[in-house]
Length: 317
Image (tube, rainbow, N blue to C red):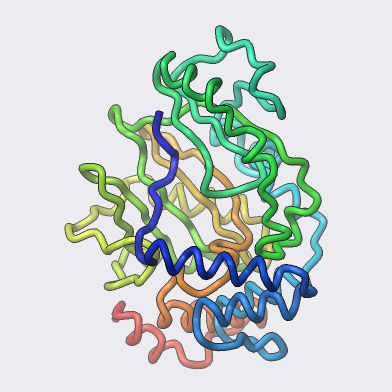
């Protein structure tokens, strides 16, 4: 039985433990000082929350100030499926086999394998169920109570999750030519795709790379995983994927739309409003700057103030 995600190893175990200890220590603080200190612990600088310039700073403001009632629906992996079907069609929705809170209540004879099991309200947790042995391991270990206890609204102050009922979902496991499909994350601002982050597994190792919407590769993306060393061809369905991402986003200021290509079809995995909790580390500093300018451009309906310099800094011109 394998986890659905591959953990990044860029921070040492001790460093991670110390960070988590610090975050628990400051957990009593109100949202604004809490996210400021957590941001500082990850970057060595305090975020500018009054006149934010960076993408990560603006994500913190989105968490603190934007209370769009649609957001809890978008981040709920169960309820988001109806929204996706309404906006782009049911053919882009991954089939659900079961939703609930108690894994002991599942009639496993009715669950086709392979499948994926994961919480509806949290990221970084989940398991692939390929064989009956995987199901036996899941039932014996029963991670359900631990998964249901995770609260992004508390640990990252991600407001939208406060209105999500924690559940566990089992859905069809997508495959592409017999393998787990690559993960295409489309960063969409007010309906316009800014960048595409591709995460892939090759020979058991995790990699990522970043592209512009016209599939120009940005060197040294500086994300959670090493850059993939080889060339990645432009997907034949890229235009269709961009259109799906644009329509699903619904014009909100920002959302990350995760898409998969499986046997020629495009599927929406999930919608993420606050990737990485909005904290530094999941994007490089140049991309943090570039996306901050891009976000301004979309909000103000004008071009970025320094488009040429930003593109050069990213290495895409």
